Picture 1: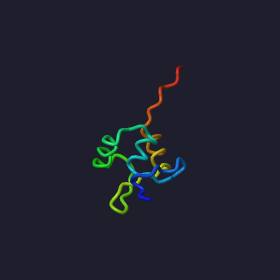
Picture 2: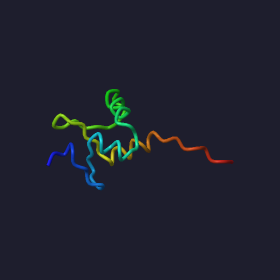
Picture 3: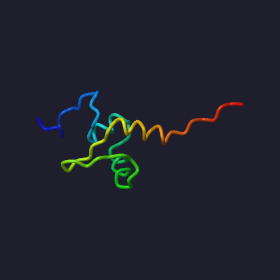
Picture 4: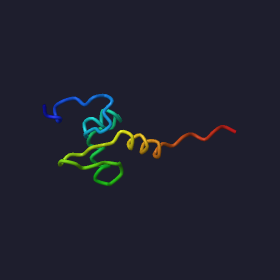
Length: 71
C-alpha cells in the first residue's frame, strides 16, 4: 500500500507533510514555508519530507512564549 494515500498510525514517530500538518494543526503551505526557510526540523529521505514528532514537540516548546507571572 502506498504511504502517500494511507493514514499514518496515530503513534507514529515519523510523519510526512500531511501527517505533521494534522499533528500540529498548521496548514501544509505554512509548513512548506518553514521548511524552505529552515525554520522547522525536517529530514529528507526518499525524495519526501519526514518530521520527527519528538523534535517537533521540542521545536514547539522552544518557540512558545509564556505569559509572565503576576507579582
